Image 1 (tube, rainbow, N blue to C red):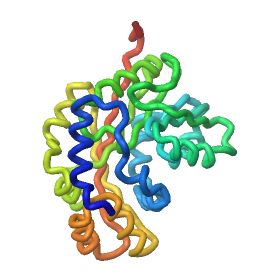
Image 2: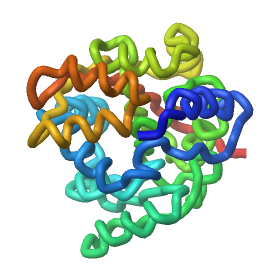
Image 3: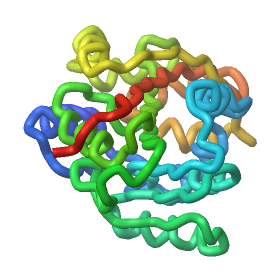
Length: 253
């Protein structure tokens, strides 16, 4: 775990404000194998997926997963969707995603960023982005690109961690003291999103896995605190699911 995690979080926030095209992920880009363990532990009871399905039925639809990482969520969408496209900017993760979905004929993975999606206009019905739009202001180019590729009536779904939810959100705020939850909530409200709070459980196979994941998510000091505060192999983690539907009849210039 790098001692510069807090500095990197602040740099990421500043980079978003400057409109940077691609921001390095502080966890999966550096520790993809550990992040696989994290993905397996997250949302252990399927509460986020339940809310997504309540908001949007992607059965028989075309789905784009933006910032798909190494493709962990692509097979889940592919089980019901007509076609699934994962978009990921980091070449090593693109290669891992290709390997994951090699046997799934309805899934493809493309290299690209949220601000420059390698997809045609009005070509998908659902855009999904998970833990990718934390910072609100500065994300407008990515939101505009999502609208460009969505068909009229299509849905943009954003899943982010809820920094108000204890204890995980409290640990996040300790590492990101400049994160303004009120400002970000107001931003997404102005952008026309509805918001659903979802309480989930992360569940690990053993304490070593739990500790390793917390160490790639937080600074050394906050990770040590988090490990000490988790008594067993699970912890509650809050998410917010943001949803916006593209108006029918909206014309693309």
